[in-house]
Length: 102
Length: 135
Image 1 (spheres, rainbow over the protein chains, first blue to last red):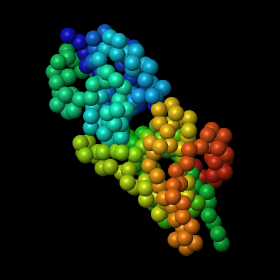
Image 2: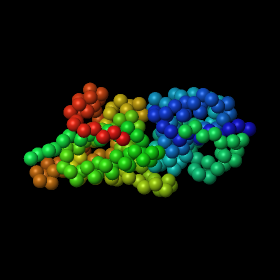
Image 3: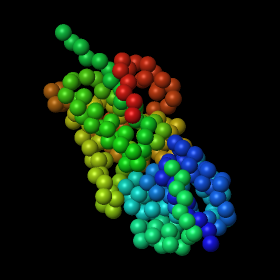
Image 4: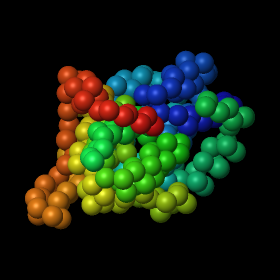
């Protein structure tokens, strides 16, 4: 079993996503929520870091927060799985614990 | 006696995640009543405030994007966007909303007052401003 890490801050403003990636075990799930979803965007200065993390971690982004921020599906980095609220609950259930990176 | 000052509202935060963007809009709209020369500058994550296509129907939040489009009607003359901030986020001017402006007395019209500017222009515009409000 592994942990679910949530990140709710923009990767351009805070290092929450960077630290969530750096200080988590292989097999962890990282869920981007609120302003954290900007980390799921293609073509940004954070893209390489996110793609690098997907080597041994799974990345998710919350659909409703993507929509509010006008990030369409085709602008989400390939391999990042978009989940709805029910998917969020499934991730919580599937992992040992939830750790929030604020 | 004329006492018009150049006001700049500097926006550096993403919409929705914090209250900054909404608070800035509120102050801009209030300030519009005082007939000052008003411009808005969007930098860093603030550029996300102008990205078109926001849909808050599943978020239980008010979509305040349409309010930006009315700013021209409130006397806001310029919405400047920092180019480097756009590029760092994989965005171009095409991703941004357009805001029209019209002077109702002279009937002068501008189709879009959203303008991408480089760092040198940002320096100049800030220096020219007499008051800068930061959000």
